[in-house]
Amino acid sequence: MTPIKIMLIDDEPNVLSALQRMLRQRPPVAGRPCAVEAYTSPRAAIEAARERVVDVIVCDYRMPELDGVETLRRLRQMHPQTARILLSGSREFDTVVDAINVAQVGRIVVKPWSDDELVEAIADAVETRRLRLENAELADEVRLQRGLLSRQDAELKRIEGLWPGITRVEWAEDGSVQMGGDDLLGSRFGKLP
Image (tube, rainbow, N blue to C red; front, side, top):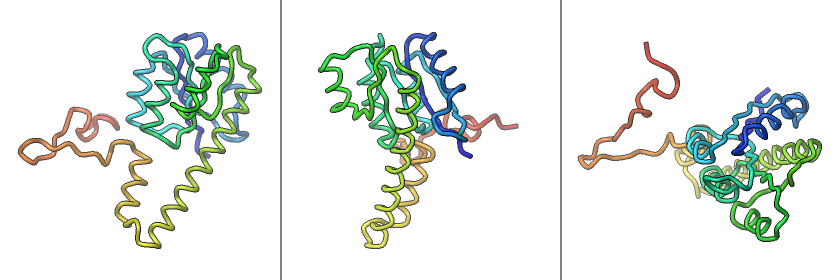
C-alpha cells in the first residue's frame, strides 16, 4: 500500500520530533504507513516541494523566515490538491481569516494540540485530497470526451502531478534547451556509473 506522504514544517526541532513520534505511533489511516519529511526551514520545505508531491502539509504559524500562512500559500500555488493544516498557538481572528482566505487551509489545530485531534485532522485531509484528485480526474475525462482537452494535455497534466516541474522547459537565447546541473540525467535520481 502506498504510504501517506506528510510534510511537517516547524522551526522548533522538538515539535517536529513530537509530531514524527506521534505519526509513528498512531498512523492517521489504518493499514497505511506514513512517509514523513520534517523541515525547520519553510524555505527548504518550499524548495523540496518543487521536486515532489506530498499528500498533507502540517505547518506551524509562527516562524522567523516566513509565517505559516505565507508558507502554505506558496505551497498551495505549486500543489493546489495537497491538503494543508496550520498549527497555531494563536486564536486571533486575523490569523484564522488569513489561513482560510490566503492559504486555503483545510484545518487549524491549536497548540498545544491533542494527538487525537491532529491525527483525525490528517486522516480527514487525506480523504479530502483523495476526493479532490478523483474529481479532477473525472472532470478531465469529461473534458476529453467533449473535446475540450487533448490526450496530450491530459497526459502532461498527469505527469506534472507525479513529478512537479518535469514538463517545464527553459530555452536558451539560441533556441536550445537550457539544462542546469539538477537536470542532468541521473543527478536527481541517483548517480550514473
